Length: 530
Image (cartoon, rainbow, N blue to C red):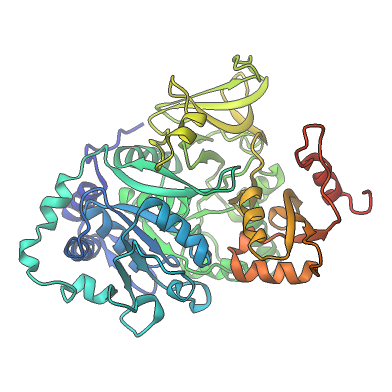
């Protein structure tokens, strides 16, 4: 495998790519950007951020749907020596405020949200935020004494004495072990944590990922996963710049538009959950479409039905179907490889990537033999630097020998293929998004009419898994399932909204006095048995 070039940091990588390949098209969509465009516009944004007081290591939060501006501002943050704190465009006000406050971000960059929403309309007062960089139009998201328009930030109208601000010196002073991103993740405590990753980790991890995927010049790759998500940012946006592929940022993805996207956009690389590929096949069965450009499909799932892989290879003519396993705290862990038989891709996530170790341990921490089930432990360059501001929680998952305790249950076969069979944590996954039951419980309690809430994840034919909330009303309160779901849709990200709400008089308890979620999960999957 070819080693990552000795760039060391994202700013140096972008400068090297722009110098060697200035005309390479790196962003295509409503706005098109070459490597030269991206490098110049990012430097202008970096200079503007420096003028706003952003210094080395300062955190800058960014919120909005995938678009070219998101890409420019991300690289501008890195040019200024800053650390990016991506916020989900699905976040409502207090969800975003929590991560902004936790990381101490003093500058917030906002873009367009779903349906034209503006984050500033939703945010509570944030005394620590000195500047909001938003649209130039008069909008709540970019109002107040610290408001700066995006165009003004990048053109020089946001500051004076720009010549004294040497963004090149700042960008080149960034070190490989400096943090580049703090990614939000939900834990079983219900409080989102900030996963710290540095420049060297991200460059190495996604250079290797892209090589295994065979992503390269000439590829056209729609980035459907949000840029705030580890896959969208690192295996999407950054990977395309690393390998000079053309990214197609998808702000709002609709399954109905998938085939048109593949056909008209001449897509060659496509990544998503199994449901997305089933939709593609269904569309092909209904009408003839030209999908000859599509050569590689990436599906990060615990299991991919073998029939799906066979149909994609035969019907679409794919060169490869890839399955992979990674997590926010550990970047890329394992991937299937070229030549793997369908049964390996369907039942496993392949072998560990170079520079990463994996072992399976039992309840007492002992390593289990090949074929044995246990918790997956990971060690190597990809393990996070820790949770931002939470050394105790970091120590709970990264032991003294550097092993990351993933909380996932897996099996390693005799050939080194890793299969994910269960999750030790209570997290469940809705359409590819991790959901913490405890976080959803805490959010639902803010509604005001509930005394207790317990949320469990259950299998769902559409989204993979879905949330089911059991709620106990406060004394004298009138609670309806429909009313709570409506409130949840207005106050939390869509993937966190429980698909079902069940109103009960009390929650079952186990012998230790804790809520018995095993019983609740059974009740959720077998209505009428309680």
